[in-house]
Amino acid sequence: MTADPWQHMLKQLEPEYDKYKDITEYGQPAFMIDLIPDIKGKFQIRIYDNWNLDSKEFDVSIFWATKQLATWPNCRRIAWDRWQFKTRKDAEKFKTLFILKWAR
Picture 1 (spheres, helix red, strand yellow):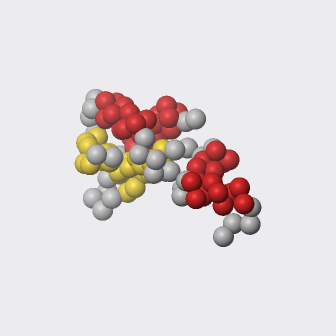
Picture 2 (tube, helix red, strand yellow):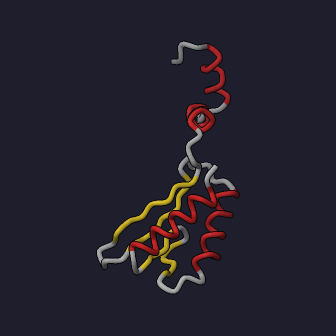
């Protein structure tokens, strides 16, 4: 039980109170992007919702990435939130572009 009665009340009203509190206090980005080397010597980019908010904005970021990467010759989509790149340089370039676009 929380020592502060107000926080206890808020947690009863909103079970995910701590997660939302952290979002507002720390201002961490809602969307994250990981660069993952795969066993074939290629590189994958995975975009995910850091706070698990299931927001429409997250979907918009995925649609934006899909549109951007449709024209990249050394890239292919392998899942809804993942793309595979032939080179690390291309994956890092897209990661930087994504972070600049979706930074808050």
